[in-house]
Length: 122
Length: 110
Image (cartoon, rainbow over all chains, first blue to last red; front, top):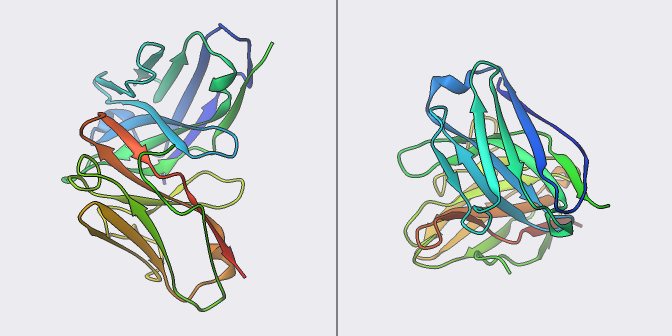
């Protein structure tokens, strides 16, 4: 059974960089067939896709966040990471890592981490 | 404002059948498949329906999905108290080049 677990600071100061890591267990990131994703949910709101990465390093970002987002992968640790720069209070959200299963029609997010709340505040 | 439009709330009594709609456009639902996610209170979303109408292993057949044109629907039959959750539709948008989600529908079991 694949499991994903987010880790990182729960509090980030405005203008700084938010950094989170997702550790994958029960399966190898290098096995292919999946995009490794970050999705966030503002308090009491809906879901927003941030971006995803393939094990080879190819990345796909939400255009609205692209200038501030970097997603990277470390296959040796079976982890992938999110960096979001120049954060403001509007970036306060629960951040989820998820696996996107590549299928013939379109991917779907079939496994999710439990989520981690990141608050941007001084 | 979400790209995909869902009703903010829905309700039903145990045993009833409820449907949740998801309206989009030609660049998302009209040209790509729809997935549905269930988010129980305080938990992460869970894949409920993929490729418009397919259920992952372990999802009861009480849950079904359909798509027609630029709209999709999730139906839940034999409603149970444990179905009380938020439900989100999602699809890739070819114009925006982004995954778009509905705003979510809060299902209450009366």
